[in-house]
Image (tube, rainbow, N blue to C red; front, side, top):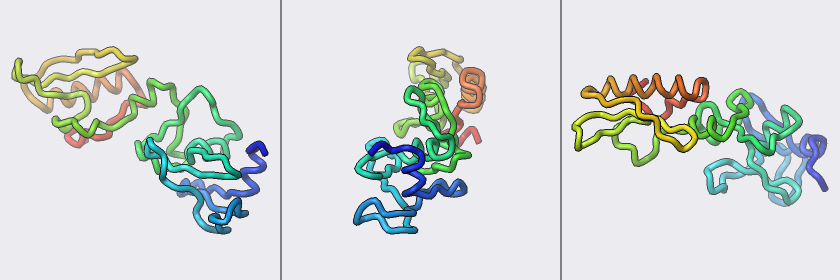
Length: 172
């Protein structure tokens, strides 16, 4: 059975305020009417939902539920960076580059701000952003705050609304 919007709406109810799906009709022994649908077993950290033996990411299902289509060739970006926040107001279409621009600082970032690192050979802070696999040097700075400000401005100039400020606590 193909999962059309009608089939999905027959089995599931989507709450736009919470971004959660609830079972309207059970699709297996494990699904109970009125209970929250989905689980968190994806490798990428996204919530998933299985309906009629088909497993889907909840954020893509939410987009389909509201808009009636899912773009095959475009990612759906979580604006606030929280992969479990599937409220439709937190989802937007993005290009792959825009989607990557809206990620938080990596876990191994020791400077405290995305796109800023300490250069021991120059004894300065370096700010740079990456776009389409190319590194764009913003500048070298004596003061950490100057590097943070320059990195933030470069992210906004380069990525616009997709410029992530996530994981840059020094920048907030």
